[in-house]
Amino acid sequence: MGSDSLSSSQLLVPANSQQQCFLRRTETERVDKIEKSKNKEIKHDPRLSDVLKLLGDSLQVREMEDGASDVRKWEDLDIDILAKIFLSFDVFELTSGIAQVCSTWRLACCDPLLWRTLDLSMLKSNFIKIPLEPYVYVDGRSDKALTRVLKVALNLSRGSIVTLIFHFNLYVSDDQLTYTAERCQQLKRLVMPAWNRIKKIGICKAISKWKDLESLTMPSIANPPYLMEEIAKNCKKFSELKIMGPCNIFFASTLATYLPNLKVLSLRCSMLFKDALIIILDSLQQLEVLNISHCLLIEVPQPPARHTVLKALDDSILEKASRLREFLTCMDDTCIMCQRTRHDEGLMRWYKYEEGLWKVDEVRSLAI
Image (cartoon, rainbow, N blue to C red; front, top):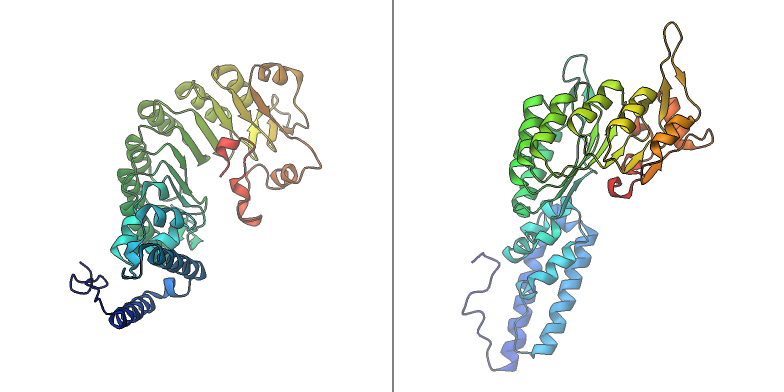
């Protein structure tokens, strides 16, 4: 038993009421001393202070209900109650301090209820752009911080994670992605980080572990066939895809070849070629929901004519889309998101806009 636990002799409560009061005061001082010695992240977290107060109140109520002879101990609180309280904390608070308080709190932090979703969407890499591949250099401390969070979170989760969310500006390495994939093989939804440091072998190895994957949000990729083929081969329940980037004829043809049973597709706020849209509508016969809201719709006429930006969908597109359960569009000149997509030429620079705006989607199941 840890140093902050009571020995069997300490658990013996004297019959004398004065001795009881002394023991209670001693135990309270001991708990206060332990809490003061915890790491600084816990010490200065006002939300954790609120939890400590709440737990203290709960223990006081229990003492009154059970009689004055019980000794007050933090570990007396039920694990399921602790787990429900810890639901109000994010992954960084859970991994940086709460799980380190005592063995009981760590056990509560392993509750599957806390780990249905591993949300790292607040964690961004500290990086600079460079002219050579992978075109970014990530600060070592930033990399170590991500590795530490992943290791602690994945150890606590014990394979319970079904939704994994990365920030689009988080530059995950092959090793970090593979380590994650091996420890959350029940994954059903993945929101991918930036591709820069992830190689073909890394993502393919990860996808091969995620047999239950149903939904993927990803940045656009220059060579999509190998990824889509890996998904088709390993993820038989796959049905939802969101692309954060241009969708051209090559990409659309790849979807038609490898993911013909796709049911939900979002291309919002991206450059979308009209011919690619036609391929999607013609070839993805199982498609039920298509979101092209705020897209920059490009028509490529015969040379030497120049590309044109369409202001509205023509009747042929609308007729093809009429079979869909939902066809979500917005091409309004007064819409701020449409304006931003045009200004960014169909390749959204999300870092310029409100924090968290990239998480929005008109398709509820794809919003974060």
